[in-house]
Length: 446
Image (cartoon, rainbow, N blue to C red; front, side, top):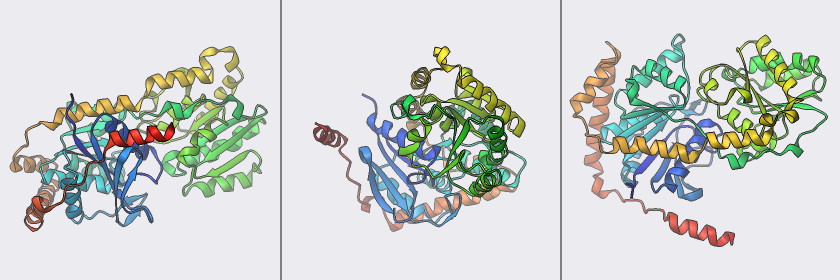
């Protein structure tokens, strides 16, 4: 029998917000619980959703009030979250703290506090960052601080691993590659849902600069002009939506470009099965789970060749383009030509696409590989405090000293908190009975 662990996932990015990180957290946690582990999630409050909530399968989520500053990330407070994080870690008898996403303030703070308490830590990086812009330099230095004292790191693609190893100056053997996945059963093709009088191109994305919406704005009018039978379904919301609306008005494409706005997770398949081609115009992408969902629904995929995208799908499922306007238009033209030949090529049929994606990506496989990482570090010997300071000191002439100071202050705060609220006086949370939950669900379904 494998050892049961208590795992705390931490990120600013979780439901009800939508995205790849949110999906990864939820589905990986559910599969880890099915493997016998206890999983709780810490995130910031979303509107009226605050306090403790239970999701399907007994997944416990702590929604902590916090000030949101940018792109759903909370305001950095360094030490202010330590008291509540410590309470949760002790109440839930946490063995491993697993932070997600370099842009998440809660992730970095939770890992810092967990290390001050002597807990094991894991970090998963879901993004790619550059080295030449101000934001990239700042996040890279922050990541270097966090990963200097983390037990193991996970990346969602080999390209992402190379990027993280360079950004944080890590040893490659300290980083594992575990991709994202989907629940393939939720993305069954439905040939009857598409309109045969149109070739429909679907876009589902956050409408922000990083997702290449400027490329989309430039390409849509050219494609509509060259191919009279083509129309676009564009789902998602963000600051770039106004650019799409202006483009549609300027070129009189109201009948051929449908803007769906924000699309709920439960409605993603319903939108995808209406299409023939899925378009991704991202300028940077570590994995891109959206193209996997589209391929599972049987769509031909056109994507910019950036980051870890070339690792995701077989070449017969996807057409690549350099992230330039002419290249995107050309790649869409190739895909539009392939749509008419799908009936003559069984390997291009929607059901074949679905079957192949189902074999390649499974959350159960992701959970099993993540579990191996946990077991690898669970019994690792805890280094002395001075060794932690040596790791931080190596982060730079000035930054190293600052990082040592932050770690020292956090450790001292932990000592004070242990004196004010001794561990023995903190009530341990009751264990959720998963077996009883499954039995009740089974009885209701019968």
